[in-house]
Length: 394
Ligand code: ATP
Ligand code: MG
Image (cartoon, rainbow, N blue to C red; front, side, top):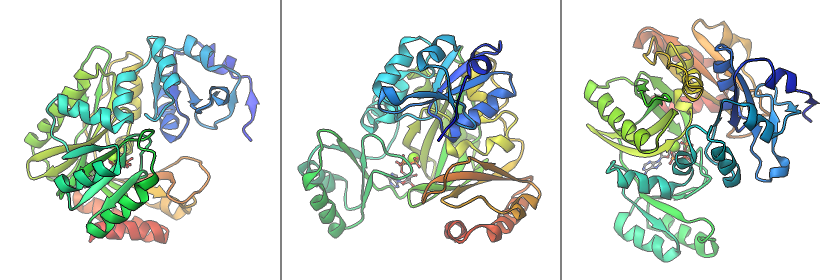
């Protein structure tokens, strides 16, 4: 059980500007770490569906604070969020204060794949060929047009590969059609996407300040296993200035359309010189965790600077970083910490299968140095994580 204590003095009245983060997971915690060095306070909100269950919490130890969500909203200089799958009434409440950054429109675009696709189409931004699926009949027609390899995704509440069906042949397609006979399409429309044979996955994290100035981190190369991010390499190798600029132009179009403030992540598929947008995340993002050691100002610090109306920090890479996600396993032994240039970020969560427990940033100044460090860390990882990494290296 979390302990209750009077957080008013600590969180509302110590003279520091307060920022409220909707959500109380590791991203809120790392935003706190970025904010505290700037002398700013953060309150996290347990954004439960049931308003009666919502509470203000300490972003690090998660103790419940004796502060209501309304009080926190009133006293803060800005409200932001660590994830997009938020109850609509809470988003509306935040928006009504005039302090919510980015804003309800951006959250909706990240939370609902149909809204997201409409945004991409309206801006003429290349994305995966897709069709909205509101019945098994629609799925059959999508299969005719986009098949034989399809990925079907729920329009809402999907993350880390949850809420997806993959169909790579006729038999798998038939099986999914059978599974969906009783599916409530009215409650949850789906999006069918053509399965893209991309060369690699990259992402662009950019940050927009309250005056509309944009800054971008270098592109990051991302490797997934079972729909979940396993490894990011930053700056992504073999990126031409043209490719970086192309990604930035896409990002800027979206940030401008969404009247955005803060960090916006854009996930991309690269095919030659072409970039297709997979999806966007209106927040700090797992593929930007490398910035904690690799850039002068991390994505967390820059997001907080932006929403607090402060000037942005430098987004240039200072080192090469490999970010390894630590998923579903207990805290690693201190042997890992003994490795030079290895930085553990632990989230203090209960261990569960597939749960992101922490990440490790490996820092180097050349590709060969980085590869040597990855190899050393590899040997110290639990079997499940080592296997995931091994699959990538093949
Ligand atoms: P996350 O929370 O990790 O970003 P998600 O659940 O929001 O994941 P997506 O990003 O849409 O889902 O998909 C997860 C991964 O599945 C992608 O990073 C990519 O590896 C693969 N994937 C998704 N869509 C496609 C597609 N159309 N073609 C090929 N691969 C795809
Ligand atoms: Mg994704």
